[in-house]
Image 1 (cartoon, rainbow, N blue to C red):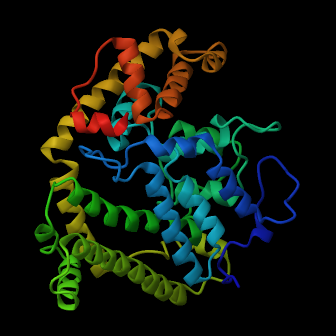
Image 2 (image 1 turned 90 degrees about the vertical axis):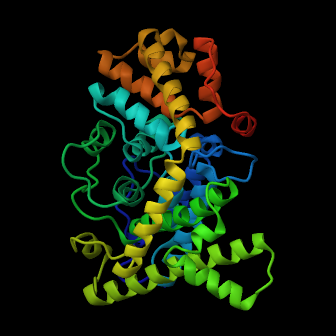
Length: 392
């Protein structure tokens, strides 16, 4: 039974291109399935999540991250009486627009695209699911429901000001009401993203040797988690101790979001999904005290992981890869594959060409970007041997 403020598939606003409904799947189930079967989703397998000097195959990728986010979103949506299929669809699609090399690649591509309308991975996800996936006979893209597209576009909140071109282009055809908050299901997907990366970035940073269990045990929330584990299992193996502590941290975040969402939803008492959108504030969020603690943890990760010297050295090298690939394709589109050159033949100006080049580079996996860079420049970035082995 869905809550009155959940998104009911029977009341969906539908798709841009009308289709016959499935006899055995809801419209949101079909959205989820189309995302899973998309080419862009498969490529997430070989895209960096957090750029760490890898020493094996156990670090998160964009694909495993997206699966973890979907799992958290399903759990929270189910407890709150929301539509789990829609929350899962948004969670699975939220990172489709990411470039190779994680946020480092996005920063580099955004700078290169500044003269041509910029680049934003959320807007690029919309471009992928509405245009760049080309498999169906009747339309480009995946023809997702309005609710799924809305969730992808604004799961982090209303989108105001100057819109990224990739989002503005589609919104002009199919109004996603970008000025409002998204559905509760999309808000769940956004918080599930925070929960997943807060947890697994700590785990991956420990595995990479960027900090220790003792470092984490001095942080808010985690200190209590380690104390509890040590009380129950005083002589536990260090790796099991770590796992037990971080999974308790994970549980604290999930339970806090559920409790705070229940409080906010009871207070606002929305009678429909539309009323959730019109509240002017999110209803799925961490409590203020927990959010303050998480900010301290994020600050720790920023300095000890995201800006660690070893990570920054790799970031500089892969930034150069993107910076050198872009002008090569822009100056000579003949380097693009044949199917991409068909689009190039119809472009009216350099801005349109640059956007095609950005689409192509954004869709690359880490390993393919490195291969293309080596092929076109005859040089290779100075990456650690362990990272090279892990990425192909």
